[in-house]
Amino acid sequence: MPDASGGIAADRLKSFIERVERLDEDRSGISADIREVYSEAKSAGFDVKVMRQLVRIRKLDPAERREQEMLLDTYRVALGM
Image: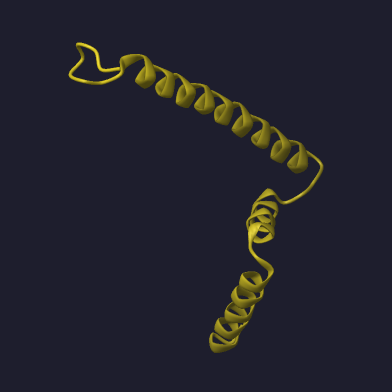
């Protein structure tokens, strides 16, 4: 459905742009919710920095997690830690 906009289907393009905008708004809302959870955890005495590390680690595949932990241990030993 090309129109006078140089062959671009303006309605389809507008639909894509609006979908991205809605998703971006959702992402902003979710980010605010996540910040609130971390704030609550901090108020309860938890270390947010460590919590963020745990969230990252839990996302990893178990084999990848083991590999990273082994490498970290190897580096610690090499540094005398």
